[in-house]
Each structure stands twice: as C-alpha cells, then as structure tokens.
Length: 171
Image 1 (cartoon, rainbow, N blue to C red):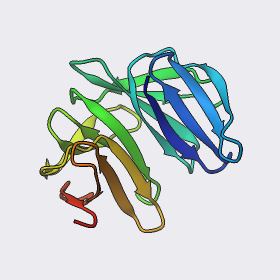
Image 2: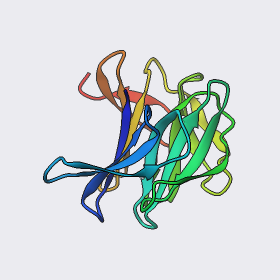
Image 3: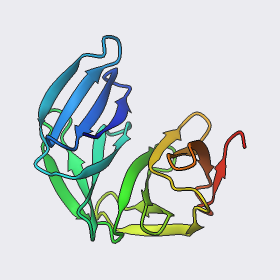
Image 4: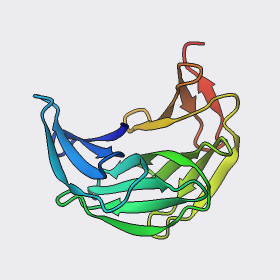
C-alpha cells in the first residue's frame, strides 16, 4: 500500500493520501500518530501538493490513460475534481509558493509539467527530464529549488523549472 505525503507546516503535520483505502490522513510530526481525516472519494491518488499560502491541498489521480487534478478539503478529506491534466501518468506534485506554480511529473513522457490550479490543464516545461525517472517532487521555498527523487537510479535530482532538465545531486 502506498501513502503519498506532504508537509502542512501551518498545522505542524504531515498530510497523507492512502492509495489503498482512499483516505486522507493527518500525521503528527512530533508523535508520528496518524488520524484519519476522511474519505477523499477518489482512488489511485499518486501525489499531493500543498499551496501553503492558501492552505489548498491538491492531489493527482492517475487512471491509466489520463491523469486528473483533484482539490482536497484538509478538514474533511473530501475531494473535488478540477479537471483533466492532459498527460497520461502524472505521479507527483510540488508547489512553488514564490511563483504560485503547481508542478507535476509525467512518468509516461518523463517531463516536468506546470498545472493550472483552476482548470487542471498541464503544460510541458522544456524537454525530457533526461535519464532520470522522477517519481517524487518537493520544492524548497528557501532556495527556490525543485527536487525530485529517482527510485530507479536511487538518486536525488535538482530540476530546472525553466528547461525541465534534471541533474543528479552529488554525482
């Protein structure tokens, strides 16, 4: 069973989407105790991204042939479909608070994409990520850096948000 997580710094908790049960859960970062918030109403959640400025939680659902952007209520867990992303296999999300940009990675094309929060429509950023198979994203607002994890090569990568190129860190 896969659980996708994102840090909610305002509430000092991790938010997780349990792909098997379809539940949104809160995990206390001090005690590691988890509490079910509620059913998301969607299965196959592949990633979460939090706009910390508005406390808006986004999720991506991959159904095999298309990916959809979902907005999740952090109090009830309930999801609302925003729209189709236009890419087949979006696996992860990260939000850049300085530019108010939601990023995703499409595993089918190995490309970084920008996703419109209001429509869900995705737009490719530059070319392919390179040899990296990115399956997780995180944005560091202090350094304005987008990071990705490559579980195939077992490396952390830095992703250029203009060209879409991924560079292994420490390689």
